[in-house]
Length: 186
Image (cartoon, rainbow, N blue to C red; front, side, top):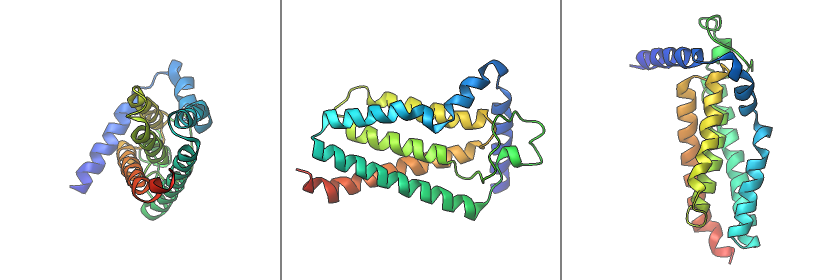
């Protein structure tokens, strides 16, 4: 079974990566960079300060930063333990795929997926009842993670697992905030 999943993962990656069109390379190469999304992070902070008291917003932001540290650490440790080659470094396929970026680290699971889905999910959980359009925040991690296939650095399973880890981590830290921190913010 594991071998059939790996085969599906590899074939799906090759197919999706091959859909890339050169005229969109600049767009996807830009979307995949973290600093490009700084205005969105500032917008998240603005909304949190606007919809919560200053004290609550500060504790929420500290919770989010702690969660990001947790997610990044978990992602890096998992990558070192699993040690799965990225598509761009996989000698079996790197000659037949489009490669726009060439990181040398490991692939499983995607840090872009885990961090973007964790940040988006926890911000969504905090703002869903206070900001009607908060579901639109999910456009960011969808574009951000899809870009990783386009530029040739992650398999679909890397992204799916990363997204699931991110969503679960956000839910966990949100629950921790509600039970441990929230009573002291009022």
